[in-house]
Image: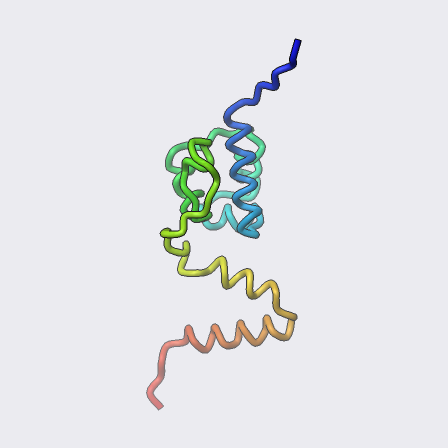
Length: 122
């Protein structure tokens, strides 16, 4: 007789959430900050200890630029090509920042501060 593994749907959804987060190169803290929860709460979602509400699922999927169906298992995993980059490209900027040396990081921060400063008439 074959043994059938039974998985709780919440655990499977958590596993899919973790895969999506990791494929984007985000930490639990970064994803939590993007949706307004703690890293510990993201950990609970990923481990299946807490269910995802509809609103939280939508927020997480927006932050990850994926379809909710990917998490709930109703479609094949894929990135949503048509979706705008969440948060105006902040995730990509974080990836580039992490790839820089400490000197490069300091230079990027200085340039970002210069660009963000209000224009002044001189």
